[in-house]
Length: 91
Image 1 (cartoon, rainbow, N blue to C red):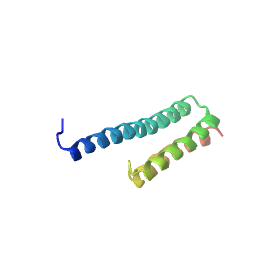
Image 2: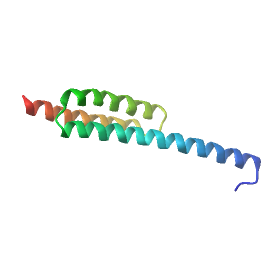
Image 3: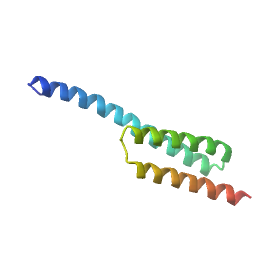
Image 4: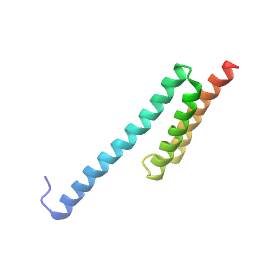
């Protein structure tokens, strides 16, 4: 445990930031996972709504600089590509 006042404060900040970062990470992973489940179940309409949610969360996470912009773009692109393959395959 830190003894110096500034180190104690830094520890408190680190704990808060770590908790918030874990929330962001799990939210993004959960959104992607839910989207993939809907794609596998061939629920296209629901998957489109889930894709919007993935976009929203990815953009929020980039804004807080948790992940880089290009990683978010890559995630969004891959999810859109999955949806595109399923929708074009059904027609």
